Image 1 (cartoon, rainbow, N blue to C red):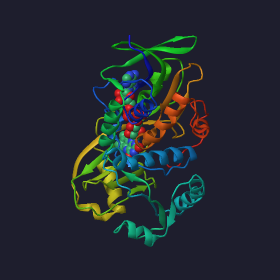
Image 2 (tube, helix red, strand yellow; image 1 turned 30 degrees about the vertical axis):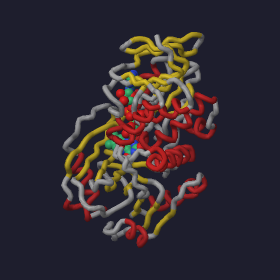
Image 3 (spheres, rainbow, N blue to C red; image 1 turned 180 degrees about the vertical axis):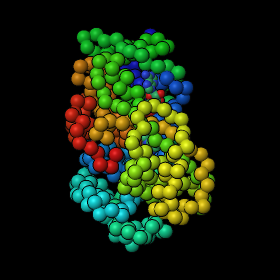
Image 4 (spheres, rainbow, N blue to C red; image 1 turned 60 degrees about the vertical axis):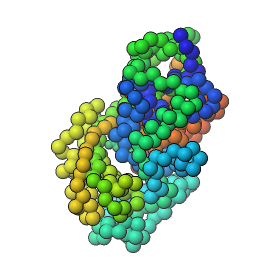
Length: 381
Ligand SMILES: Cc1cc2nc3c(=O)[nH]c(=O)nc-3n(C[C@H](O)[C@H](O)[C@H](O)COP(=O)(O)OP(=O)(O)OC[C@H]3O[C@@H](n4cnc5c(N)ncnc54)[C@H](O)[C@@H]3O)c2cc1C
């Protein structure tokens, strides 16, 4: 039986960059995934938003690290993932939302985020044609952006392979063997794999992996739908996020990708809890009127395709990151909610430093601990 320093469960938004970062630290790494190839879980459902604009300092820090890494991909590593630094705009038509976003600005700036409140005119300059009536302004973070989630997964997969990572696909982790409460073996559908460390990066199935050692991780997936239009000439740069809920939905967000398609998704209300990923006929009637009301310029675009995926959600909307306290050698990085793609590259570096050098990022590990009380709510979930 071949020994690995680290086995990662899940070749997704978190597992792929983590494999690369751990291998760069000189560790011998294997990734197991029950699906047939890389990024086939929820990574490919993500529409591509990459931001450091969060309400928690720990998430802002991780998001900034992700963006720094992504900016280096093309010039330093020769990898093009269609990244566009178009910024994130949260336009506001509601005084209550204006207040809460303005209050958040202090926390965000304190955490080093480049973000400003813009008046209505400045918002219209960034998004010409956005509905003028009732526009109060909005926050804009110019260093956020968007990219192709498929290309990012492919890039990390290739870079990890180049660093010597081994991928075992069609291989499901089904349990562990321990000696003196330390992981020694990952049991899979294809046999046993000896190791000293395991990273639980199983996404929407992170809770099930935790339960294999009796650890309760509150990851409860719910489904979200997304769509993509035909490509047209570039006309808008930022990701636009409307956080005002209506009767049937919470926030929705959209942007124009590098190839000209508009890509969009929405959070249904109430949440559709569970793991059903079949597209529904309710999605387009829910999202399109809201998008056209905000941005009438979209009205002639034709939708090409829709899909449905899962947010691996937690009760407070924050990820779960940290060591298992009962089983040595087990590290959890699950519950990424709607942000696994944007947190992956930054988190990977933090996890790699923790496992290879024992260097703990106390801010991140305290805020995102698997053992926190899960009260409160991340405001920009
Ligand atoms: C419509 C939609 C839009 C989204 N848009 C964005 C966005 O713009 N930006 C953003 O950052 N995020 C977005 N997300 C969220 C993002 O997709 C997820 O947060 C992210 O993919 C989760 O990453 P992960 O690595 O935890 O899980 P995944 O990418 O799902 O990877 C987990 C992997 O673990 C494997 N696995 C599970 N259990 C086992 C086991 N026992 N053995 C072996 N393998 C196992 C699975 O097969 C899977 O491949 C969106 C999600 C949806 C649905």
